[in-house]
Length: 74
Length: 250
Image 1 (spheres, chains in turn green, red):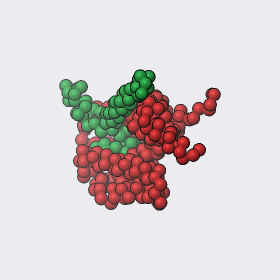
Image 2 (cartoon, each protein chain N blue to C red; image 1 turned 90 degrees about the vertical axis):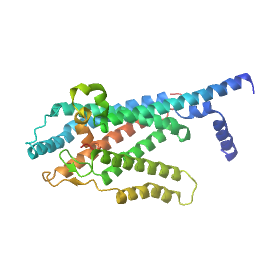
Image 3 (cartoon, rainbow over the protein chains, first blue to last red; image 1 turned 90 degrees about the horizontal axis):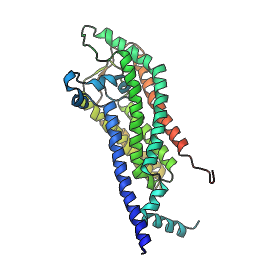
Image 4 (tube, each protein chain N blue to C red; image 1 turned 120 degrees about the vertical axis):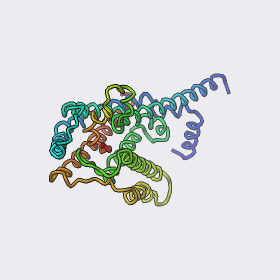
């Protein structure tokens, strides 16, 4: 195998690995966004607004969308 | 083309990930297509929601208000605020669908016949697993309907239905592409048998819809399912247009 061929093969493998990492990051990002819009009942928001005492702010904000999207709302 | 040539091309692709990757799109390219299509899908759904669906939601919220007006819990958002939440929510879900489909396509792309075909299969899987099957097992409920099951339990059941729907669809696509003798029949069974089990085995939503004004439940279910179908159809069509094969030399 020539040096050039090894280089091409190595680049291919690296591209394969970084593509997989990107794929996993995309899946996690999508899952987080879907969780915030469709499922969160206060866990995420209390991290940010623990002081306000509003327990399920996202639930109320996304209320109509959750009903229309058939995600269990309350 | 001879099968010998095919075999050679296939083993060449398997041996060289760089070549294999080029057959599909790069993750960033999938994401760009997904985000553009997701934006189109969200805008189409928002237009329908604001023009049609919100009238039904408003009727349900008004009926809910009459029902327990005595329980005067201050709402953190006005109806206008919740309308803003609906618009924001559709946009976030457009982005969520874009990331999820781009992530899935990154792994499925090299196995698919073409990026466009993969996109249409993924959006069809979503229509089956996210819209149709949940609507059959746990039909959409308007605001103001209480359930005997807790919210956490119902969220898990909903996710289970979605998982079974997507899994069944993926199995069906896989079986369809094999050389099995009754592959078409088996593919349909791969999607329908788990779905039938879910319908038969999962607990009832335990929803009390008796207090809703006449016609509201049906109206709500129609607009809810229509809104979701519009979202996913627009996503499918926009993505397919973006992924249409380029003419050589164009």
